[in-house]
Amino acid sequence: MIPMVDLKEELEFLREPILKAITEVLDSGEYILGPKGRLLEKQVAEYVGASYGIGVANGTDALYLALKALNIGPGDEVITTPFTFFATAEAIAEAGATPVFADIEGDTYNINPLEIRKKITPKTKAIIVVHLYGRAAKMDEIMEIANQFNLKVIEDACQAIGTEYNGKRAGAIGDIGCFSFFPSKNLGAYGDAGMIVTSDTDLYEKIIALRNHGSQVRYVHSTIGVNSRLDEFQAAILLIKLKYLDIFLHKRKEIAKRYTMELSTLADKTPPVLETREHTFHQYCIELENRDQAAAYLSQNGIASAIYYPIPLHLQEAFKDLNYQEGDFPVSEKAAKRVLALPIYPAMTFDIQNKIISALKDYLNTN
Image: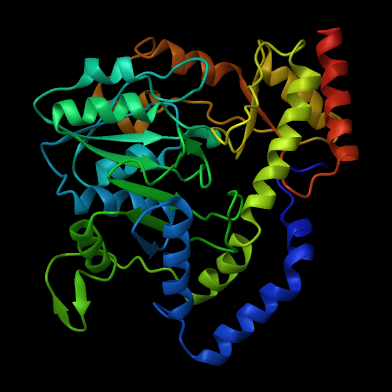
């Protein structure tokens, strides 16, 4: 089976430096909040163009801690997209606030700025923008709305490290940026890991305490926090992989370009591949009328595919108390029925990609 992501191939390329880095951590005796983590925080912040980085346990915690640092909680509303992974809205609910959904744009799958305006109420405190699949949302328009209504902006850049919008990198445009280093991400650890970035010193100080039981001085707790710390092993691995991130992103773009060139006349929709880094292709997604049948055909021919995401958040049982109905967000609902993600990873050879393209062409030409 051709997988969606082949992490073993990547490991073979990086095995020697990664094993060396892990050994260094073992020998150091420092496993939590150590020098590797501090160096990674510095390098990720510099990479995205923010002043500070804060390593946390995972991307979901990054979103939750961002909300807590902004004092968002019960009685507050946070506007976000219904077409994303569950964690985006889950973090809002965990903070005690209410997720308020705004529909997406059909061409980018990102939250529509025009729809955001319609959802603002006196209770609205923030917008969580998701750069879905690695494609940048329209941040200029969103920041203009936020400034007009005095709203905070959290960037869910968990799928978008290295993505750029008008010369700025995702995560460093809003008030706080959140990253996931889940193993399959464009910059992935070998376990759970995450990062928060910001250029606001006060927010940085608050999050530093919040991630460590509300403490910056041992046994002195200024607030109620959580235990969400990036361990040294994952930091060491990520420091190695960060060196190769731009190379890997370039390879993803080349793979995406070949997909679009070969499939654009057959699939209902393929993503554009721009000269800029507006899309870093964490996922390469096409749209098909008979998406599920196409996925089954690929599977029968030894090719994995995936659906991100089959049920929009407003229709998830966990959010039934919000009283949304089918039809409330038609663009998101349409995408959920049609989007299909194809395998993409830096170690993919053109021979492997040609097999995927050939199989999909066979299906599309006969259905």
